[in-house]
Image (cartoon, rainbow, N blue to C red; front, side, top):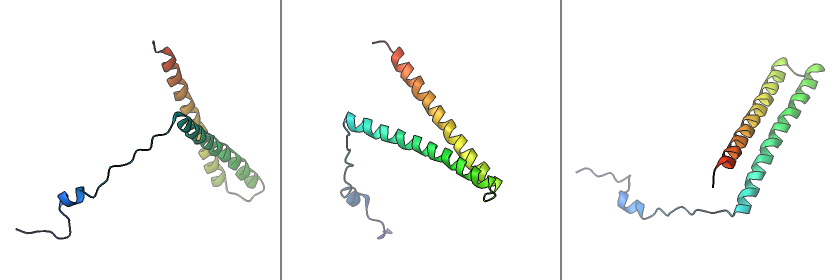
Length: 102
């Protein structure tokens, strides 16, 4: 019988594994965390809009290529579109919850 000394037998290694510790957040912490996530996402969209204006101004004075302007504009457009879609899904979910009968 051939034995492989490079791989430890399964029985020995399973004793080493420890269960994952699950950290449970309080409702207040979860709300703050979700609010912070949304704020960061909206700040990112606003930053991309500001970047479009800066790149456009650079293009007007001749310091940027049209490619840079189009890339920045497309990124901002996609971010705004994603934000709008997420907003619509959140509103749909809220309306669905409000339609539930108790």
